[in-house]
Image 1 (cartoon, rainbow, N blue to C red):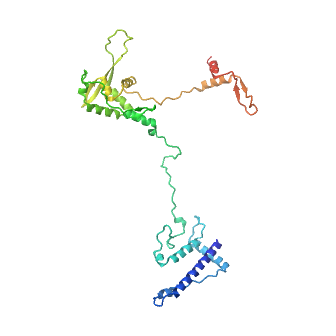
Image 2: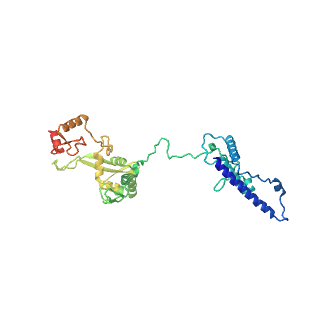
Image 3: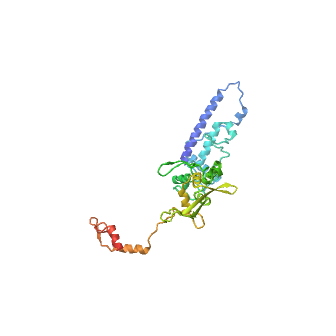
Length: 353
């Protein structure tokens, strides 16, 4: 570390001599009519040139400067940079002398690109420097993982199901575009016995349609159960029981508002909700004894395994067959094989017998 310091000091001494020669030559070229600042001449003190040949004295001086710096700036816990702190101060001081008195008065308070810090205010104690703390995108109570989090709402199947329940246009799993649901008018109900279109106008039908498709799947089943009635057939016209296919009779109603319940025909009811009669029949077929829809059991099927007793009996049955060793890799393998004429079907037939 001492050798680089000596070389740097020699370079700075030579630079000071060159600058002094430039200043002397400029003073000689000054005009006699120009006023010279006497105060500057009085304050000017030429620096004494150090002997570059005295390497031993330079080495001792370097050690004294290093010891003095370490006593003034003790920092045992932090590792100092590879560059000597004395050399850093020397570079900063030399840069301040070249910039002149104007910049030295300002103190170089700002620190940016191409600027050096103020030697008076800067400190080489790295213990006071606040290092940036690495931030992690991790919340308390949550665990980071390379795998993506499962979001079922973004699945293609879930989006299609949501569009189907809301009655909007969508593409089914076969790739067929299903148009959006709308109110149908397949029959002129103004001439039917219940006068459906006269009792319930178009605006009321549209409000019922919008309210129905804003519900979830289970809520739509409740809506159908509350607006329909299923009763057994009271009177039959034929005596042959085999010809009596119809066992239940359905009644359909709509709430007009102000707790007014109006009975409508089957066609008017299905056209207003844009559903098929199969949906109404399935809701009543799968309802509980309290006239509530049964919970959806789709996706709850679990695989039914065998008991350990049955598995042990099957293993004993398989081990009862004679085994043979491998013909080609007998020396390298201890695997055993069943006979070539024995198949899984024959093994099962023998197990059943």
